[in-house]
Length: 337
Image (cartoon, rainbow, N blue to C red; front, side, top):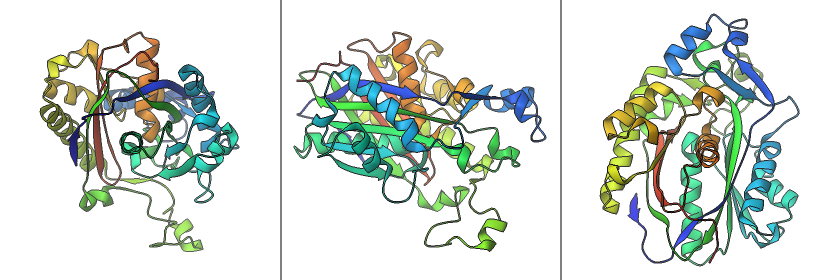
């Protein structure tokens, strides 16, 4: 699906992020599996990642990010009437992380649900929140993207354990007088879902002693296939959206791709023709945080002063599903209409 935004102007008015304190370096990983700092950096660009404590769950990452976003937007949590949490690692399947988060924040009247779209989750959630506000069903939305992937990684599998980290980001969406979202492009290819999956624990393969023994409750990934998918779709999704919105890549001021692998990011930037100075990269410090990837990168871009009012920001994610999604936004000064 693809669409250019017309009519109601909606934008991000608050932004927050959170990453656990624990830093796990490549050198430490080299003591756990057959790998090296040099091998990981060469293949992925990752140097370190954040790892949640054993007692930290998704809500514990989402809460400080959400509070920061609400504070930046200068709004009362009670005024939020929609909470969407994009994650593949909820505290529990139910109650949802979004409901727990809304309660902790004091958004007692908010509709709340979790969204599962792999690493593309944040893009899907932002598009849904936009639709709710534009359709008049919501007045103010809080969207959180984040994951605690360390809980579902096999730390004996070097194909996956070197790639992922934990973290979360949050945004507040409001109606604004000008600027805001320009368009969205979303899609999925379920035929490729087998290449990136968590096979155990669902209704297809319920948890049993056998599924635990077979390690079906850890992330399974066909690296080469996912790499090929990612390098293709990061480019095609962005190109389709730009064409739909009547914009050129030269007009983009800030490019925020999913932070999975620096080689994938570099490939997409070259194909699209985005200069290096416009590309936001923090995969070296966080690894792949799945749904937390893009909002964490947005927070870094804000800290660097790149998200100035009027800047055209292109965000593109891709991940399990296999899914992908892009959005264009004219950054605003954070003032709700």
